[in-house]
Image (cartoon, rainbow, N blue to C red):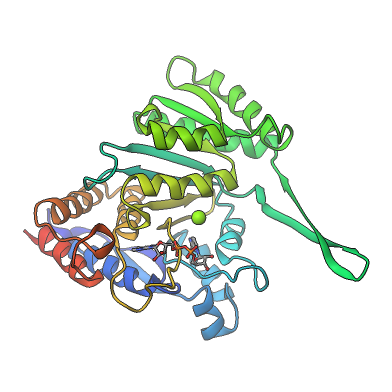
Length: 344
Ligand code: NAI
Ligand code: MG
């Protein structure tokens, strides 16, 4: 393939916080080795946005994505408890990125082998609407904390249809809807009901069953191979996608993508990992695999596959692995090894 034939695709690049700039640099290197398919507009967000422009989600960053409809994003730090609202959540809202796709596929031998799962997470509603407040009792202004979630029939049907279409497009056979409709009868009951309604349109093509989230968490440990795809509400999807990452070697191995009508944003499942930031030891595979999803999204399917194969060969033939996988390679050493594979 002559990579110089590729017309460059405009995309926003957000280095992000913590290990973000490190894994982004590593990922850009391997994309460069693939012929630099993207023309990057580099913009800040998260703490980096606060530092550069006094805003965790600067208007220039939003505008950049609005124009390009495509972004690759490093993780963004969100303060715990007090402080600003998550820029990730705000980005999802700004571009109505309702569909979060988080695949987990075994690349290296580990506790589990032959894992090949895809989690689809509703990305805009559920408990993430975080309509929260405190109630004062006596002198304590924060004696009681209240939070409410929300799912709509329209949003639940939309994500269910998205999941079934994904299944058809990717040759998947079964979707397990994850809920807590025994307790959160309205909030997650409506989600389940909507999924059941949509499933009727796909009868004979894609199977559907459902499972209560706590039972699902246990089954994912005991027998993850029984699942094919999981369709989750927002919070359950957040939690279970980290669990899926654990099945395939950890958060360094877990890509994610966010789809809406107005844009698509690709990222790692993991956060900014402040405990290892700046040390050059982060595993860049999650973001590299997210970049592979991004290539496939813009129909560079062959490049996407080349990148996935190069990562696999680097891990399993060259034996180059980062420390989370018990290897010795630094973030950029791993990237350079993938580049070497791509150039052979
Ligand atoms: P985290 O995912 O950043 O880290 C959890 C653990 O996994 C840490 O021990 C970390 O060292 C390890 N880890 C994560 N990614 C790794 C990688 N690529 N290579 C090797 N080890 C890796 O989760 P944590 O600590 O709960 O959150 C830190 C910050 O990240 C918070 O501010 C949180 O809000 C933010 N966050 C951002 C996300 C995003 O931008 N999409 C997603 C999740 C968290
Ligand atoms: Mg998460």
